[in-house]
Length: 177
Image (cartoon, helix red, strand yellow):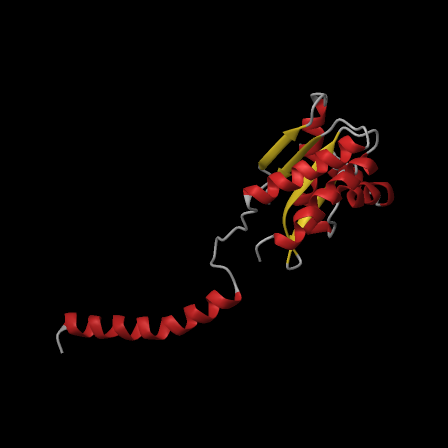
């Protein structure tokens, strides 16, 4: 058998053997390197709802949605909110996506509580862009965190977090699986 014929036969056999394995893996897990992409329209809608709920309570806020890399996807600065609300909303959301999976929390309020009770946790709050204040909530899909919505500007992070929860609740049932 010629070398070229032998190589062609080996390649055909490899393709046949790999195809069923690929089909099985496509059904059970995303391909290597896959990152969930929160749809822009749902991210905007969640942020709008958070700002709307806060404004309904008289709070002038900014809402920021970040992806799992901590990159802002949406920043909505409500009317008459002050400049610092943007940084605050981002840092709260960033805290959830960067530390939440490791320390098993889905809100920045949970991190805030951890900082008060764990003698080592306050040091985490000194990391660049981490903020130990309530006000951010994770987007969850099939038990996995896929992003976070942070709110800043209400007179207390607990109030910001209520608005963030409202934003997440508005779209949670429509997030792609």
